[in-house]
Length: 431
Image (tube, rainbow, N blue to C red):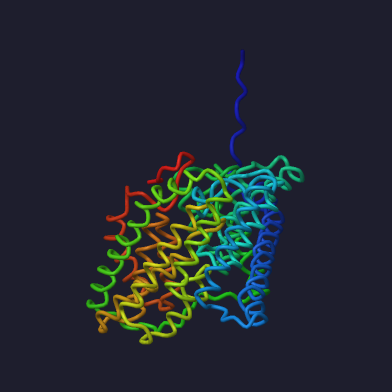
């Protein structure tokens, strides 16, 4: 029986006309749509947050961030998310402990429950971010609609477009999306573009990411500039500090990675979301009462507030912030709250770095914070380019980039082959 010979890929001069140009409109639509999805969920969560943490306590004449109110709200958040996971169709998707900066298509009917659980998590002060549930929701909707409208395009392409679009919207720039997709291309070819070079493979995801980033910039004006004093002329002492702090930050992050499967299994033994999530919310409330307002929520606004108050906290207080937030992240990710882990890790890195700077005041704050963030993001995500990108953006100083690249190398030696802050379907750590 004769086998069908696969069609050869388009010749290089024809790639732009036959492959890339037809992807422009789908990429733009996915980019804008994914950004609006992210912005809509974020704005809704902010409205609920304002009502729960400001309006309601004022009406009840209760301190909005008193220990009692923190415990009550986070426990109530656990109950609310538990009800969604238990009763709403699709149970808010798969176990959040398995999520990272990626996703696979799920049934579109699961998306409303997933987004509702994510919104309640964000508004309730839980130490998780919006990235993973937004990526999963965007992938589900993009895959479903894309396969209906343009069934000839590969399904994997819709996944790449949605992932890139959300990353562009989250960070307000397509650079992070390009770095994530580039790392993925190192292990597999981009679907439908086997005949092209790297930029052919990145073309459609970059367009989606750019459209998502521009939509976010126009609507929300996001900024990762934390207000750190810039370092314009780094020296060898700055390089030494960056090397040490990034490595120590990586070790600190690995503590969470090793503990993650054990904490996750402890909650899973309870066997029901209405046991896991309320208990997790209560523990998060107690941790929030211990750490205070700065250790609540996804952490981006809190990171900026922390960085802009350099000198206001001693090393002990900063160490407490880092430890409390790390434990809160572990509990939130283990008990079933729906959210991502990158934004809280950035806060943990900032607190860790400022603690080091408070102990050794000669270290430049930009070196301490960006190097610590670099080490922690490396340890927990194993995304090298994204770690460098986030650290460089926070440093807000082009002169810091060589230091951060060099500091990433010993940190990578520490984390490579070790567990990361993500589990597989069996509850075991990914390496």
